[in-house]
Length: 165
Image 1 (cartoon, rainbow, N blue to C red):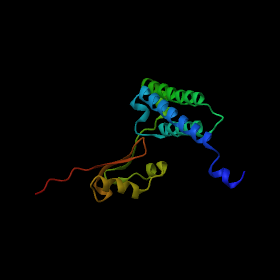
Image 2 (image 1 turned 180 degrees about the horizontal axis):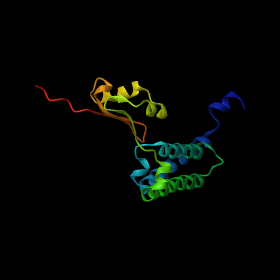
Image 3 (image 1 turned 120 degrees about the horizontal axis):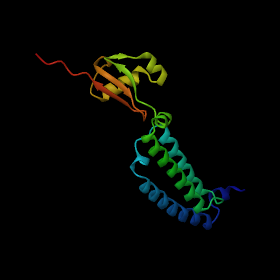
Image 4 (image 1 turned 60 degrees about the vertical axis):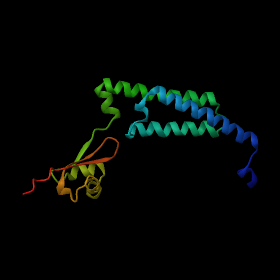
């Protein structure tokens, strides 16, 4: 392959990519609308894996000439259907919910960092402090709790301010 082929291999490849991109994008949007808002909700680890897989399937469908549009759409629809089935089932079966979802973890309680929880979740006290700052506080001592949410975000709930004299 010469260097010119790396830049341009002909119009047929560009036209195929453009047509498949429009059709695959339309199919993906349609499938996501059918599957509901939960498929596009705030990501936890399980949802992130599915989202990355969807992107990989879409990219492969667009750029790999050996993958037909119909095959790519079936792969997208299959993954979205499996995501729907797992989330639908996890609402109904606790054992499945516990297997695919992580529970929020308290990292700071009453202004005191919970060292074991911080280590287990690989979060530093400085990261917890940043959540306190974002909530309007100035120090960990002001936090009633700092929680590591299922989606990886940190939520700080500040202790109520003492009444002014």
